[in-house]
Image 1 (cartoon, helix red, strand yellow):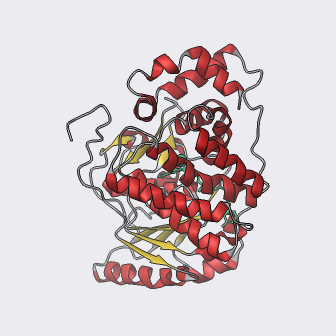
Image 2 (tube, protein in one colour):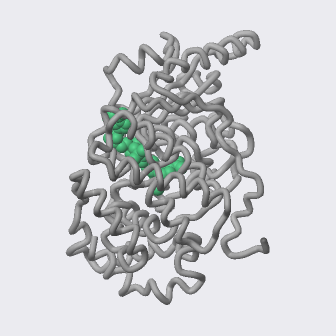
Length: 374
Ligand code: NAD
Ligand code: ZN
């Protein structure tokens, strides 16, 4: 293929090195960690482990019991009211350094995308030094991070599989991850048992991230045969999950966990389209979280993705899920302009969806009109 505006520069795709899959597979964690601890002890290095755990699990014994946490380990419960910022990642990394825990034998993330991304980012920063914002971009991470294990407790974003960890820089307003092979987890554990407690709305919003990403990719002009195959199977699985009576049955939680992982693999060699840039606009200007933001953005996507939107609303109705509306009514002129700017900055996915002249379609008036439908 010749170089095009959509060329990622990625010639070699790195996937997660190893994974466990299956019910109660979180029990494998302590064994994986024990191996790391032994290697570290033999080298007279630090054999402690840093755990980042979604705050939902604070006080719930099952994770603690199955995780092989030792008294000397460092356990940090990650709040999820806000998505990660570079400042928050710098603070967490600084705290670990102050605590003398800058070279643990492993970093473990147990939670949703926020927690997994936090674990990835801190692991990279501990070995690379500097600030999180230094590494926002592509292939800026210089050396491997601390050995890291990811354990998703909610399915959809694919954060367990990807080579990025999304962070917002509060100073520049830039929402961008550390896109690097070094960001990929060394090991993941996919245990569908862990998703049983996710609230239904959240389960739908996050699960739909996989579905949305894949229909955006499959409708785009930058195509890749392997990315397409991952995307198609992700969509098949999502349809099975959300078109059935109970999207959270055991079999459907298993399917969605696989869909999330495959969707994450698809991201490595594909682009999103219109939904994600609009969702990013909501996120940057109004602080809307990623997955619910995608679902809200679907309200304005009929003309671009008619089939997928119809299917989305049918699944939402079947599962009795409320998608908020009216978010962008009565904003100030400045806020509408900010929304426009925060959306059209995503040149590559918009080009993927509409071609290089995407701004001829997405004029200021058009973009504002679309936001008003949300
Ligand atoms: P999240 O981390 O935002 O969590 C959503 C909510 O679910 C939180 O309230 C959390 O406490 C709760 N939760 C998680 N697991 C639970 C469980 N088992 N039981 C009960 N509650 C549970 O989840 P998300 O939607 O997976 O992640 C969104 C984040 O992922 C955003 O920050 C987004 O930017 C990021 N993201 C990253 C990538 C990537 O490739 N790295 C891709 C897409 C999105
Ligand atoms: Zn997404």
